[in-house]
Length: 219
Image 1: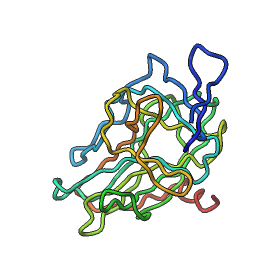
Image 2: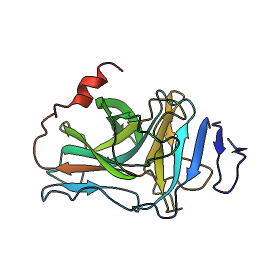
Image 3: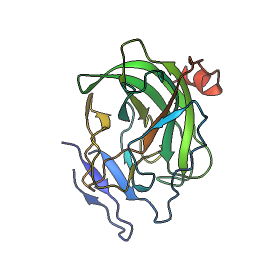
């Protein structure tokens, strides 16, 4: 069983419940979807409602991932994953951005599978909100379902947190990878829809050349 410490907004003392985690309620004035406008040929796939409610972080984050499964089975031509759009919160658990890694995983038979693309390093900038990160990966022929995922990489408190939306009804498409295995997202605060989206389009992907890719070599 996972164990985490839950930090309430009006309490100084943390209460231990159950995952090597820390959580914090998102400020009431948390911004909604601040991602860039989509291009005409792009389609945004998402499960969150655009409003964040809680932030989570693992005490020991190396090798721990969170992700959402998506399908393009009904989008005949949209087989190029262009970007990951991830909601990130500035100023918690510390005042700086540390960065993390993103990847695309197989999703067959209703369970996460092997890594298809990545992992690639990125460092967010600016205020809290949705951040876009280039992927440019063409799904193999016959692959219609997949998981876009993000790795915490560093340990608490010098790491960036993942965020959940304000819908208490679980959409059933968010996952976490902890302790060597994937599992359906389950947090005791009752919110489990990960604020992670992806953009797909009809054009063949071209892998971006970036400092992030170079930096990833050293991690």
